[in-house]
Image (cartoon, rainbow, N blue to C red; front, side, top):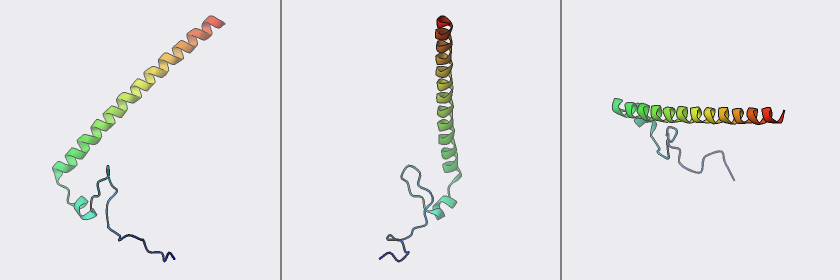
Amino acid sequence: MYSGYPYYPYRPYAIPIHGEEIPIQGAKRRKSEDVEQIITKHMRIAEEIQRRMVSIDERFERIEKMIQEKMGRNA
């Protein structure tokens, strides 16, 4: 019967990033270069997302233009 206690021993971990478990104590003691690496990594991810968004916007514009051209021919 479940008594309200977890079946595994509780460990104080921060939210895992890509499967890594970072102890909270270790997360508080991160070195500045580690933080800089994380910021750089996240900035690269943000730039890639921005590029993809622009690409999607361009595709939608082309599709819209194509639809308008086809509707103009059928009118």
